[in-house]
Image 1 (tube, rainbow, N blue to C red):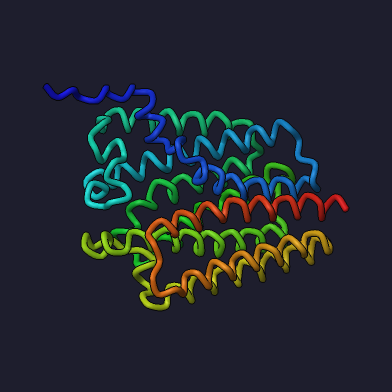
Image 2: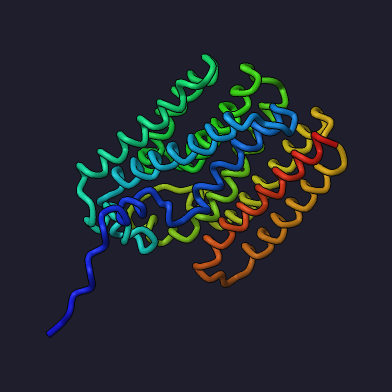
Length: 292
């Protein structure tokens, strides 16, 4: 007699729906928000604002994950990487997914009430981008650009939380975040190329074709350029310069590995996780640079 494996508790299935079992994706959204917060606050962010940022990114990324899985519940089963997601595997109902999405959005909205008017409206402006990103892969050849714009809101929101305004360095940091996200998310999409091509889903990894490694390299170069301009304007000095050079070295190493003729599928999520550490290294350089 065959013994069936015990059913996963619902709370754990919801936990997986929110991707809280994969912290790299949550942290990599939090990083640009922390960049903006720490720079705007001159390296001494108020603890209440820090708490709002951390909880806000968790709520926002949760909503983004759920809406993505709701959009893709019939596509994800056809993709090796995503076939076991709760909505794809029918471990949770659509109604439960919508309920979790509503709760996530309510949590984000409650946190937004703490904010000044500019920041509040930036949060409002970010919502359609987050909700429509999953649809972009069906109609837009480079959907990772839409995701990058959503990521860029993290910089604008966190910066304006401190100053109630947007300054010139904010836009350089925003641009750096856009290109950084385009780089690491294009790499992440490379693991799904065969499945996406078969299903007919767009991605930057498919759009750039045989030149995808060069595209990623250019995105990372532009990230370095905009970080450098931002650091110069803010007078972050040599400490931040060292952090940017170290990040550039890591991105160069990633580019060179992307140029190898044979790349195991596990490499792409590994590079994604490496970018979490690169992002935190840059955050440390910013904090030390602005305090020096």
